[in-house]
Length: 390
Image (cartoon, rainbow, N blue to C red):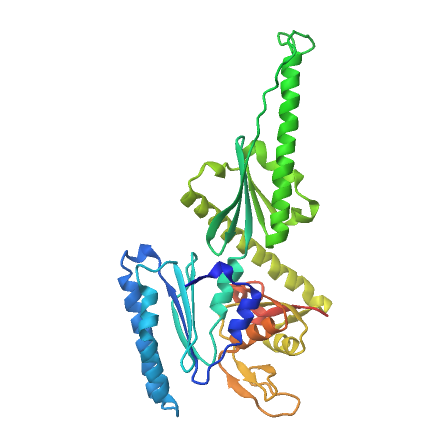
């Protein structure tokens, strides 16, 4: 299996454009070990979903029904292996062509909802949801002894760099007592020299850490950065980062550097989920504020029209809503039973969400699935809206 964190938007676009003349089977499987060490329940659920799909296809009676049924049976051993307790990943995903010989398999440290879907191409919007929440984050941990620079992506946390705080003892210090401090306390040149050296050393070290963090943020596309160094190190580290990054920086005064790898990954993942939820709410407010300025499309009809024209800069939709519509002879998308300028009805498309996502990917738009949007800020638009390029 390939790791989900290696995928980028170009890979997602390429996957979305794959087709097969018999169809493509898409499988999403949650293989959380907490469900049982041998994943027996997971395997049973997968088998039941797969057999139900076979039953529906056999009842469909289409011209290729026998070939589809035979291809599915041939693929079953590969699909069944997704539930193997020896495989890795809490989330496991496979896209398999029934007529061609390509099968794509991915694993993720983040869970996915169980799905078995048969369509003309890969069913990708659950993958998109995972990648959206799993966007890359930088993690900078600072302590009196060291700094660690890590990267979180799609539930996985890995070390990129470690930097030790240097300590150089002066070869000699001038002794002697000098007054001038509070009553009963004296400052010596020795203490002053030591304090000055410590300040210079710390400042140089934090400069090195933040310079390295800024370069990683630029090279690796960090969209959010967590800084944790306790009450002593957090704010001084944040203050030294370039102003261009400040909007993506989140300070955490906890001392995360002392956690073991598992506890640290859990703490960072919890922070990412919380930050992701806050970002989604900010995005919904941004869309709502833009509604009256002409730079937002609201509702399925307006969004489909904007996607057809290539005007969408950022698509927002509720993955819990099943959008339906039609596809015109020229490939244009229409909401509900709308028709194009020629007045001809298009082909019904019960999975219009997939078509919306594909069109957004092909036109370079950003995509944000926001669960609950249809029950909250975008209640009046069934949870679908877009920020426009013009």
